[in-house]
Structure formats: structure tokens, C-alpha cells
Image (cartoon, rainbow, N blue to C red; front, side, top):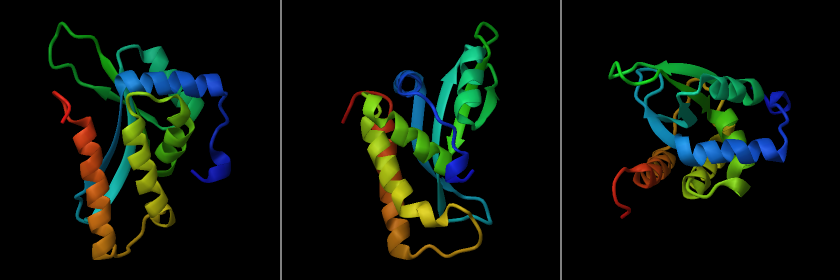
Length: 153
């Protein structure tokens, strides 16, 4: 998705998405360990919810894709996950940033990562310099620390 393909949303829609992200979402940078992309990382934004129309609205408004989460208990509702990766995730995070409260720290780290990787988002075989890989791993670890469950450090 190139820059001019990104949909335009109202600030009230971004505020709503930011609220969902703060309460039901996650911003992460994970290492792609597949054979062909070893050493590369993926910036991901996701919002998980049991209300399917909300997840469909997110997909309609901002793109991305929807994944269905399998129930681990028959008493639980079906769960759906809206996901944005790479450039789309950076765009949405940047747009939500003024409205974020809980995930503001993760958003800032994610945008640092996105700024470093903008030139390499089209994929393809390339070697990431060791120093750059260390920096990306540091940013990934910083987000994991903020996303960790339990009492704050």
C-alpha cells in the first residue's frame, strides 16, 4: 500500500481507534524468523474484540486484514483480530498518537522503528547491517517490556 492509497479518516474516527487500541489492542515489533527473512522485523498493530461489526468497521475504514481467533473454551465468544503491518501500521499509529494514553510509549517506539526501516519496507533480499539489527532488536525488546503482563517494572 503506497502513501496515496491510505484512506482518509476524520479525527473523531482516529480518536475512536486510539481508544480501542489503548483498551483492546497491541503494538509490537517481532522478529521474522522464517528462512527467507531471517533477521528482519515486523511492525504490527492489532485490535482484538468479540464484536465482529467493530472489527469489520476497522477493516473498512483503515484497511488491513481480519483473523479469527479460535476459542479455547466452549463458553467463550468468538474473537476477531484486526491487523495492520509495516507501513499501514506506522500510518495508523502516527494518526492515533495524539489520542493514545495507555499505549503512547509503545507508539513512540514503533514510530522510531518505522522511521529506521522506511526504505526497506518493500521487502526483497537485503542484508541488514549488524549495528542496525542490534538497534532493531533493542526497539523490539523495549516494546516487549512495555507490553509485558503483570506489575509495571
